Image (cartoon, rainbow over all chains, first blue to last red; front, side):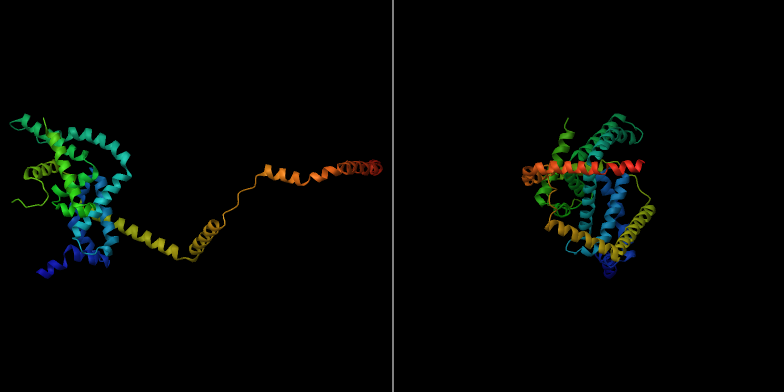
Length: 192
Length: 131
């Protein structure tokens, strides 16, 4: 049982990928595809970009598997590749993304509220909750790219601050500062 | 169950972050079969491009071309091409070197004269040709 688990652990699969094992690559992709796509989508806020960038990250894993030393968990190494690919993508198309994001923000302000289920007994409360959620979501997206990555890795992927520091290649106190600033921004957003 | 996380955040702050991240609308779910097929084809395209590039570089012509370019670059770095001469200053320098000819200007004038004589001498030939 333990041997089976060991044989299909992420780290073992990565070593097999380094030896150009297609089956190991397919298994690892199937294991991480949803997480990779969701994380990329949270950072890029665009389904097509999230699909392309998460695939780019898997391609990088295939190409760089032999450089995985195994001194960190595979997931941390993979998240680092993925987040860097997302940040590179954002940097490359910054002005264009900013322009589109402004339009998307305007759309999402409406669409999030519109996407809520049909009003139940207290429509006022539900609309207000939906608006709060929209404000929170937009507040997350007004954070700097690195702060947002820290918040998403922390609250969505449940990584520790040490792991986030490893992914973002920054000091752990920097991650804590990112999280505290994010909390402050969200509180400000929620303040009446 | 609350997992202890050494990050200086209070439970309320953690909850706020989770709520904010959870506030995102769910991303449109891709068809995973298509996703993997597309990934596989991108990987194969990349692999074949890499192989093609490696093959191209393995041919003698590209190697010779690269060596030639590298040599040219090296030569250019070691012996940069001299600046094109300034033609005005070159002309002045040449005139300056020939100032002594002005002392013999009268000879030049006579050369012209002699040339005229030559023409005059050949006038008969020209007339005879015209008949």
